[in-house]
Image: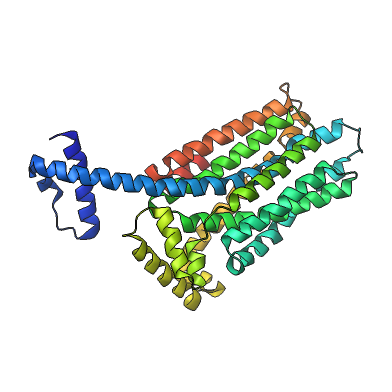
Length: 365
């Protein structure tokens, strides 16, 4: 049996098992060579369609991931910036207490930003929320870069935190609603990889430039992301909840690149949104059938935050400097950024192959 025949035989057996289970995969080896040619052509056509679907979704995911690149740059800003502020007294002195406020105001405002973002994605849509949230981030970068006094830096960090909180909610929901199940695992890892790139870029630039131009770069990233976000399609889920079924159909057609599955997906979305409106509320989270899933999600996020990774990202340069490391603190931070990037990239590659639980258990050890 030729290798094309083997591939075709595997494809057909998979499709048969998922639909009617009427075809015995062992009997596929008895097909005539002419049938192999016909079916292999069908496989090639199907692979091309799958490729088209993936390409459209990948482009959308990459644009969205620029947002996480921007946010992560803002998260890592304090690591090189606080060192630069303490060593450069040309503008105004920054005490250790003021430095701690610069680092903590951002996550403090991210919390209310997340609540506001959660409300906005339902009222004005996922895309509009993403666009809106990029504006305060870009503005914050300019405020910090041009700050004549410490209070303006505080304001800038607060705006950045609010923006990051709202964007974190909007990007996660938008990406889940625009990607197909078959590629969602891999594409959902793109924001994490881009986020690691943003951290690494901030650490690398901080080695060569001061805190003012470093903040100006964050402002530039915000404006660039705002422009790219303008070209994103609307979320089909949100369009259906607003009764705009025809627009949702057009969006899904452009993302999936084939029409024969779009009607089925539209119907599935309509059913899920109807159920959400009629039976889902905050009380349903504590129902017995949902408690286990809720507990797993909360514990995963809790362990992720309590491991202290955010503190390391925020203050890595200061940590290495205070520890008396013989290696330059900025170089040490860059090493952390590289390791972070490599780990996220490996997780993105293997998550759909080995499964989420395996990746979580192995990467979490």
